[in-house]
Length: 351
Image (tube, rainbow, N blue to C red; front, side):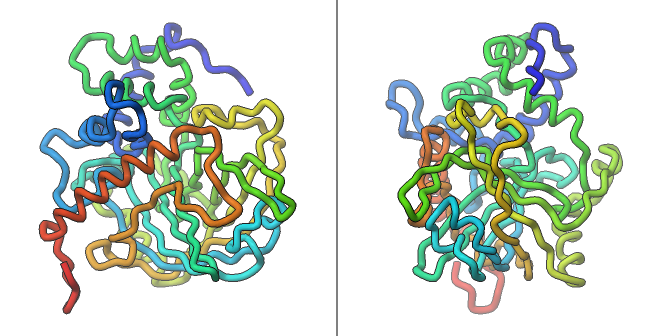
């Protein structure tokens, strides 16, 4: 794979684009947490850095704030059992509670302004175990380490001239994300996006062998590119409206694939893609069957902690899942304490 050019050779416009994407959707990258030593970085500082200028929306998630719930199923074809003994990879159908979302901490974020979209899933096995995952439409993460993520947030918010240029010079891996953000086509539907779990995990098979993997879902719907200016001109909630209308006609599906790392592949660095040609298995089909607004929806009270995993799956050397878990827990605690500010609307619904 071609190596990105060094930031010093890249035009200023590329850095401005990256800053705009990250500044408008910093919550998409809440992959840091309080597991670092207090004198270095706390989850409180990181979560605070993700909030919009006017402060977070009370009762809502501190990251990926705007979203909509769905229910559906995961139809496993059994191929995944070659990599993991997880019960929901054995052939069968398993219930799913999920959430489409925007990569932004701003509740009123217009859908057309969010470059990164997200898909969160909770898949429940027959033994009651869960596989929780949060995936992004970006193919790589902007930075390679937790400290670098926090430094990025500070650079995006800095008033100092050249802050982003200095950051990019110190962290050239950001070129991969910037290249995607500037060149990848936009689509007009959550249903036309691919979503990627950028962190690596270890699958353990029935023989006890470990496999470092990443997973993705690919849409059954054919992606239709839409010019950026047309996306920006759409109504502020067009993605939610579109997925509701689409589901009224038929269920929406994605194929899930699991890719195994090869020797020397960067398991602990989500800013780097693995080479083409790695062993990839199609393990099943995700089907979305019904949509519900989050205020009364089943995803409202789910913390999509990526370290909630079934037997046969565990975190790898990638530091981000543990960090995400810590930050997500703090976000959950705060929004749960503010539940009265985000009341349910259904008759008889509890606040």
